[in-house]
Image 1 (tube, rainbow, N blue to C red):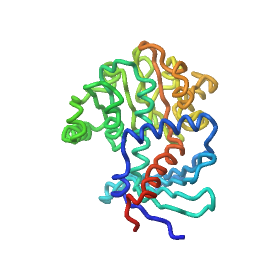
Image 2: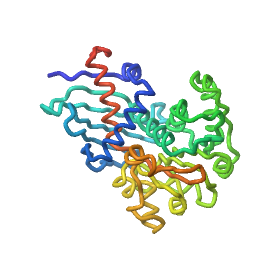
Image 3: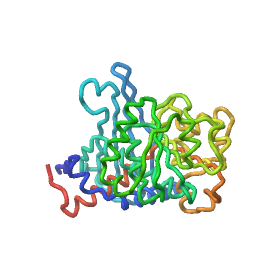
Image 4: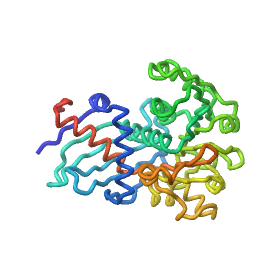
Length: 329
């Protein structure tokens, strides 16, 4: 049996953002209900040149398929004039174990499902009235996080902060020319510093590979929600551990993963929170009373990326393929 190989352009045609956000939300619920088998994340690290590979895999019990995803980031690639990221998702039959489909997505599906998770977190944890959205970072994920908030958050103003002012300007220019942002009517401006961004914005998304806290506990005002995306590997940190201790709710996509290598790892290690106090996103989706209950609370979503997201987005593509919507290569 020869597997179907689907390239990036065909993959992009098959992803509908509203359906994707709902599929990722449903996946988090399945995960928290114990209906998903997800082994620990595999990591490969390289020094020369610097890079890392994340390996995630799993299946929904009783489903038709299981999924294995590999996504890499090699950070000197820009010097070579090639993309930093690459990746592939393999879809296998749960009945026979045979490889059914190869999704050569070049890491795009990983980026999309990560951005969709941010939209899910905002839907369930952001305050009802969002004054300004704050985006920390200037890379691909920073842009995608903002774009997928359209339709989820009723806000028309955004601040962006990054260490490189030129990259901030380029990001704002690129987003300003994006038809999706133009139709949103979103005003985007550069923050003079991260302190200004945190002070002005009550929905903040961090998307960096920082290894030292960027946002400190005493900078965050009541009523703020922060979605931290960057701490997806050991040693990474975007939020001061004391900030999680200050928060009224700390929500993890996966408690097991987040206490191993997310923002929760640092907070638990330093005694700012107890593992048992961390809520899981799927449970908050099912039981909204567990999450934000008023607009004065500080909430933090620690998202490390769970294989159920890869399973859900791969099923969206493979399901479309079963209808003959992509070309076999």
